[in-house]
Image (cartoon, rainbow, N blue to C red; front, side, top):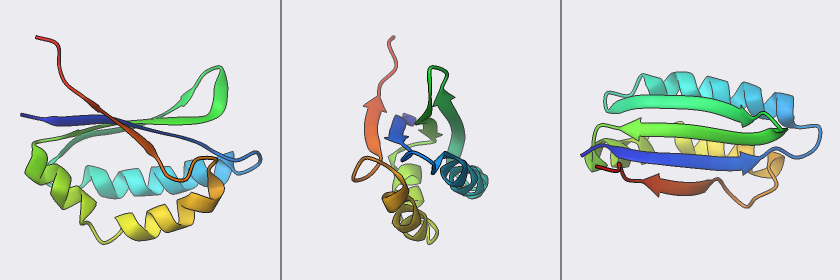
Length: 97
């Protein structure tokens, strides 16, 4: 079964351009992962500092491989001081069948 999630965070005032640059660079790397099926980056139309990332991985193993990718830790380290939350807020999703 696919592993699907929504990652959310809010850029600090004035950091939205840097956050957008970072997340788009990170997205290019994640999309190249063998098990990644989607990594779509959005901002909320009514609140452009609110970032939403829709992620789909082939399965749990692909998601775990994503978590172990060598660029994930450095990305999160650079992102952390630029967002209001302590870290991305993850919501795991299941399809309605």
